[in-house]
Length: 434
Ligand code: UGA
Image (cartoon, rainbow, N blue to C red; front, side, top):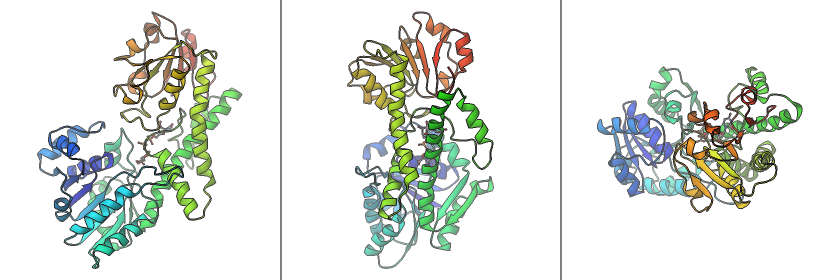
């Protein structure tokens, strides 16, 4: 099939190269000339394992093309995916749909034959209706269908998630559109992905409800971990114990810092805003947002306690600063609150992250990026394991301890408190007896 992805960001690039890999002809369009030039010169603007090879392979086969020319891409495609960002727009937390509507207004000028226009961007329920109206204003004849096909890709695992999805959700108000989208996904359906079709508004809401539900699961366990600490219960036993109930499921019950990233914080806020718009009180999601915000502060206070309330002149190391491993994304990472907090109170911070130095900390005088774990942990008072990158999972603390003994705060529960104690380390983790 002939496809156009509008927006060569995370969603557009991953989905576009995966569609090309399934044998389709894909145009990836972006207004950002620099980005398109990079892509045409074999450079990848985002960090995602496996993406470079996938793009190279499909670019050389001629199935994947990059352009700034929307007219060319739309005219030569049957299915057009809108993959632009929908960031948080204001204090109330609504989704900023400016980029989506701008794209729609422009692409409507180029509809030369029947097109299926699909929102892959996360858009609030009823956005598809508005898109339809915008296009109809420019083109009286309904030579198009607007469909919702939300993405469920996790950063760092996006290619795997595309190839082996739990489900593919299509929200369409016409049978022709559903059939066409189903045939596009046919290779994945044949490999076992479940295809679920509903109406357009239904698919739009499924995306927000999924992210809000996952955020709720995480926050729920994070709060339970606070109770575990007070009652001498191991939170991992509770996660396993409840996760074995198939009605609950075992995934997304890992405790840690506040959830972050570009999706959960933004989408939970946008969903409560939609609730307000439709006069529906989504009180559970509101309290999840509050609980997550409190958690950032709660864990920072914990660091203070581990340092016996003496932060000034203490040397603290962060292992990992991104919101999760296998990404260079810093958006809504709890390190963005923790590092400035400790820095303001006189701590000296070293940090090491496999995805490299971060511009977010470059202005902080006493925050230093280190090139490796050894350098980062030399002569420090406290090491905080903030992000669960693989290379932090089997550290040789004895070796790291040689120059100075430090305390360890494992915010991802990567080690066993019993083993750590046996080896004489001062070890703190989350929701467990340390
Ligand atoms: C999330 C969803 O998982 C995807 O399905 C969705 O497509 C995506 O948002 C999106 O809307 O685009 P992502 O933000 O990439 O994906 O990352 P997740 O793996 O879901 O992690 C989000 C946050 O939750 C991270 O801070 C992570 O550390 C935290 N988390 C996750 C936990 O604290 N515990 C868990 O058990 C799982």
